[in-house]
Length: 495
Image (cartoon, rainbow, N blue to C red; front, side, top):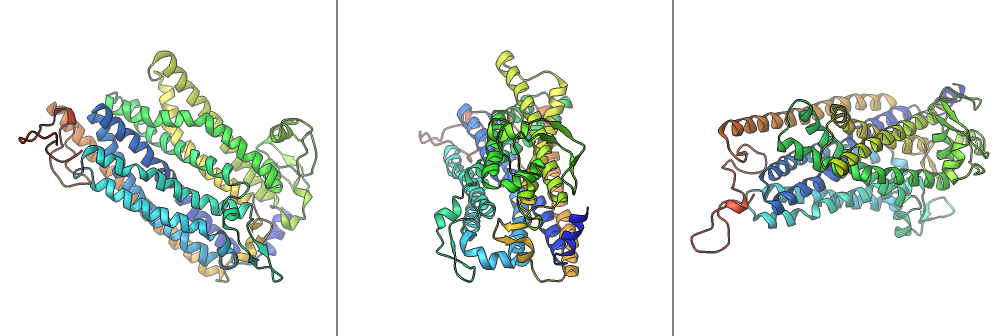
């Protein structure tokens, strides 16, 4: 592709390794974000069920999920810290010029991150040291802290896509910053809610998928049933909501970033009655190779009628729009996200139909096979959503105000490639350690359950845990003995 070759010929040599390094670290970190944002909420739902119904199985699930949540948070600390350094090291032009305008979002995220760390520590500490309901209510702010962190990051990203809240002086520097406008940009609402619901969907489907695998392997006890049902129900309820939010977000891009919309839909020339292409590849002359062409559908989706005028890529100079390769990448990422999202809607409807009609889980093994891979599908949609957002914005790092090539570091390309290699090795070790720890925890829990089943015990001992000292598991609240002084304070540690 000639235009792509010309693009790389006119950009700094360090731009490609800088972008690859940022892309790799972001793509790795974003796999952990759903669990940092949504797993606390799902865990607290299970914890609440355990306390309200005096359910030791639900309590066991909540404890184990909290342990996984803590390990995931520790890994997220590493990947998130690397990203925070990269913004300043790789893109000093952007941070130096625009940091005072949109940097508050990063400040909010950092504050929420430390608050979340404190709350997680209190939650883990409180399992054996606090009264049951006191322990639960102290953890209630945890999901809010996670959502606040997402608020800060999306505020920064939405500003990069639709910058406002400033005026440029004679030297082109931003002055008279309006913080409220810089945070609540025209695309912030659609992007934030689309992102947050995606995180809840992903966490719900991934957690449920673990128990779906167990179900397929013949583990049909209440532990696996409850571990599957609660997170899958949360995800299934939100899946149709996400489909509507995704449509709203795409329409916001159509109105606020028409060139990005043209890239994701492979619209070459501004026109009405524009067809929709599912997949396909954009060529240098504006033609599209392959893919499924659906007449007029793009105009209908954008404005609800075939006569809707859709802006094309050629509406701006070639230097101000994505290359044909970047447009094709954004288009494929968008189509994969929509396709997987549509399949998840069908899975959620299947689940809802069985629950409403039969008051039971679906009995088909194919349902549980689909549920087992739904989490991986959600992770793929998260990656595709990020690719669509970032690649579709090219060549701008701050839309219509600063190009990526203007913001990149002056560090030599060789040093950046070496840094990328080191980061890949470090991340492989970190994620490998994370997987090893989770698998070891799972093995320990399974052995504890098998020993409990053999002994005929009613609840697992949980004596080897990362969130409290070894010791016998407290009895359920309903059977716990009262102290001799006649008070209503239960004996033993809180659970």
